[in-house]
Picture 1 (cartoon, rainbow, N blue to C red):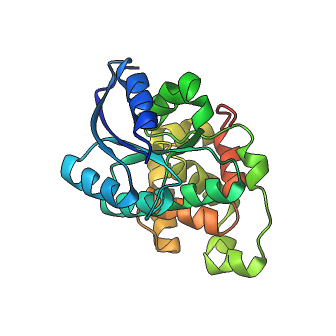
Picture 2: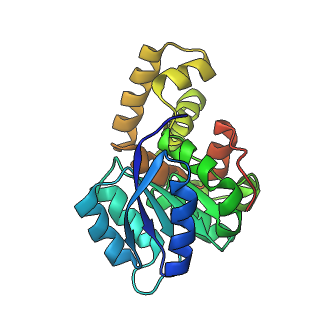
Length: 227
């Protein structure tokens, strides 16, 4: 892969930022254009620098990385966020995805797996640890499913919804489900109108809040590195 992506690093520890910056810039495919030590500062840096990617820590003083990710994705939908975390608990992972993060990676796997994760996110695809599906598998009540409109979505529509939320293009979805790209585009338009949603992040939030995140990850075939 060959990318020329501009990156903002967010972590409250300068030494951690320095290490991540070195890993990223050794590839010569990415350039770190800014750094921040808090969620509030991250929002300001992204607004000023308009990067392609943000590498975001979760736990920071003041506004945490999840809240900052949500604000950044809402204000700058084209910016893709990769969350780095020392925590493997499902609630952190689920919250990061609901906020709009395109992927999660453990800090202790950054040396070996960070660049691969960045390449995936830069290509517009999500990336998560292989055991996330099991961690996030949990049932929600029928009333919750109905409240998000997914109870009325057909099996085919749900499959297309999952793949779209995961970042697959219409052409990629077409190849997976064996329908024409035009048909996929029509399904997507219908789904967004039915669910009253507009962006990929909106679709992802609906998937998370309805309890179908694990189903989506399975449908998308995620098999990323372990935390």
